[in-house]
Length: 115
Image (tube, rainbow, N blue to C red; front, side, top):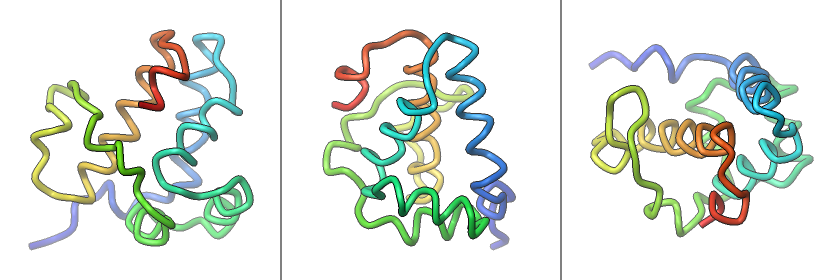
């Protein structure tokens, strides 16, 4: 079965879109980084390294030090799909990140986002 095209996208191309989405709603790049690091276990240097290396999304998540143990608490709908019902583990991680960034852009407090 062929890979979903999103898995082959460069994280370095998606990352600025997350930042733009947050900044349009008066949130910060620092908050976006905090969310990404919380979810994936990357530290700031590790996140920047992945961006600089232009890792694709599949590699970005495969190299993540650890998915946060509370990531299973992330619930809700992204693009009409409930994140908790996504069957593909990699797509679920992508949707988790999308959902967290959506919550940030909607004004949710960072303490509530980082379950």
